[in-house]
Image 1 (tube, rainbow, N blue to C red):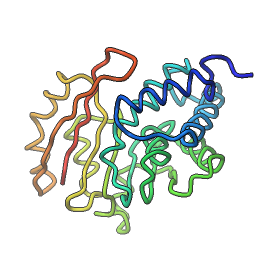
Image 2: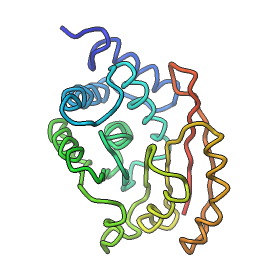
Image 3: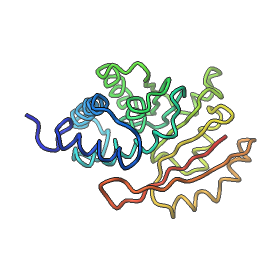
Image 4: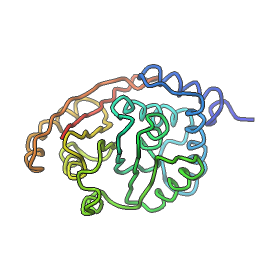
Length: 228
């Protein structure tokens, strides 16, 4: 029998469902089951390798899974999505499960994290997700991936200028970066460098910011949306 806040418990499922209601995306019971499967493996593997500093399952539900769902409205069903620095699978795994785009490629520079993601993808039977041990700088050197992705997502990766430098060579014209960020003060400071970053990439960039409160907390979060 599951403990009250264990992944897959009624309480854990309610945290996911309530958070989704606040943020907007529709999440089915089967999708919550899939997220709980990933979370249970994350807890298990995290005892051996460093996948997340958050060990409490309830906090994990809010700060990893629910927070990732804020990206869902910006992911079209026919999109090819790249998650740079996916770590334990955020936001890539929740997006593959809930947004269900054509494909989600999760990359990370740490091989053990990719081993976990490949295991989780197999266990969950996710046919639209892959994980590769490669850096974005290496991926953009491969002709098949240049200007290939409709969306590039990232979470706690780098400042806006660095994100653009990494993502734009991999984005289609008209594609969008969806970057999960913290409080507005830091985001505003980084955004002042956007024009310079756009010039470096030899093309204009249009940026807007969507501010939201992380459900179940008073934590301000921001989505930085940058269109190539």
